[in-house]
Image (cartoon, rainbow, N blue to C red; front, top):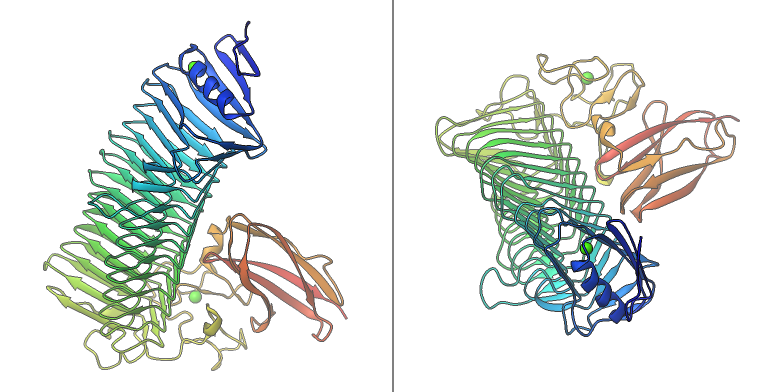
Length: 594
Ligand SMILES: [Ca+2]
Ligand SMILES: [Ca+2]
C-alpha cells in the first residue's frame, strides 16, 4: 500500500493498482484528475456534494491502460457559468475505460461538447445517472460529446434537458442538442437506456440525441427512453441515428416520443433512422404529437437493404406537411415486416396520413395493424410506392377505419390487393380483395385510444361482436386464444371473455399490482409502478369486457402510484382493471362482493 499526500487533495489511498480520491472543490478535483492520468493505477474520484464553479475546464488526458471512474456523492453540480466547457476526459490507450456516475453538469459552453466531452481510441465509455442541463455548443453536441474509434459507449439513467446547439455557420454545425455519440471503427456498440431527453434544441439536426457509428457491423441500442418537446429545425427532433456503413443493427424499443419536431426544413419529428444495410428492429415505441414540416411526423426511416421490423408501436396525433403523418419509410431492398401497430389520428398534407412507404425492390409485409382517423390528400391511412416491378407488398388482416378516402393508395411499378382487411370505403376498388369487409370494427373506445375489439354479449354471436373478430386470413397463425386470427393490432381474447392483446408480453416498462383488498366490497386500491414517465390510462371493465370507468388518464412520472376505485354504486361481480402505458397493456382481475 502506498499513501500519497499531495497538496490540495484531501485523501488519496492507492491499493495495488487502484487509487481512490475524495474531492470537494474544483482545485482538488483537477489535482485528482492530473494524478489519475499518470499514476499507473485504476482511479475512482469521489466528488462530494456541492456546487463546483468551473473557471478552467476540468481536464483528464491520459494514455494509461487504466480506468477512471468519477462518482458523485450527493449529486454534485459542475457549473460552467455559460462561459466554458465543464469537463473534458481523454484516454488514448486500449483499456483505459472512462465512466461517470451521479453528477450534474450544467451551463457549459464550448465549440463541441458544451457540458462534457469524452474521447477514447478503443476504451469504453459509460455515463450513468447524470443530469446534463442548460449547456450550449457553438458547433456540435451542446450537452455531451462522446467520440471513440472502436470503444463501446453506454448511457444509462441520464437526463438531458434544455441543451442547445444554435450555430448556423455551416454543416454539421448546429447539430445534437442533448447528446452526440460517434464511433469511427467497425464492430462498435452504443447503447442508450432509461434516459430522458427534454426541451433540447438544435439549429440543424438531432435535438435530443444523435448516434453516429461510422464503421461496419455497428450496433445501436436505444431502449426505454423518453424524448419530450425537443426541437430540431431540420432532421430528427427526438432521436437521430445514422449508420452509413454496411451490416448495422439498430434496436429501437420501448421508447416514448412526445411533441418533438423537425420544425423548419426537415423530416422526422420524432425518430430518424438511416442505415446503409443490416437490420432495424423498432418495437414497443409510442410516438405522439410529433411533427415534421417535411416527411414522417413521428418516424422517418431510410434503409439501404436488409430487414426492417416495425412491430407493436403506437402512433398518435403526429403530423407532417408532406408525406407520412405518423411514419415515412423507405426500404431500398430486402424485407419489411410491419405488424401490430396502431396508427391513430395522424395527418399528412400529401400522401399516407398514417404510413407512407416506398421501396425500390423490397418486399413489404403489412398485417394486423389498426389505422383509425388518419387523414391525407391520398392514402388517408396507407400510401405505398413501388419503384421496380421486382418489389411487392402483402397487405392483410389490417383495419383502416374512420380515415380520409381513399384509406389505401399506391403508385409505381406494382399494385396491391388488400386481403382480409376492414377498409372503410374500400368496396368497389380493385384493391379490395378476398376477405375484405367494410363494416364498423366496433372498437372498445376509439375516442380515448382504446382499439381493442369489443363483443358485449360474448359468447353470444350477435351484432355486438366486432366484425373483425375471427375474420382475418384463416391461413394466418391462430390468435393466442386458439381462435382464427382477428383483424387489427389487438385481438379479442375469447378464453377470458375480455379484451386482451399481444402487447402485454412486452410490458416490462411498468407493472400493475393486484388490487387490495381483493375481494372488496366498497373500495379498493390499485397500485402501479412506472419505470419511466409516460401517459397512463387505467380503466375498469366488467366481466363482459364492457368499459365501466376510467380512473386514470394522465401523464405520470416514473415511480409508484396508487389510485382508489370506489365501487359503491356498482353491482357485485368480477371486474378487470386494465392499465395502458407506452403502447402496452396489463390486466388484473378484481372481485367485488356486496
Ligand atoms: Ca490512472
Ligand atoms: Ca380470433
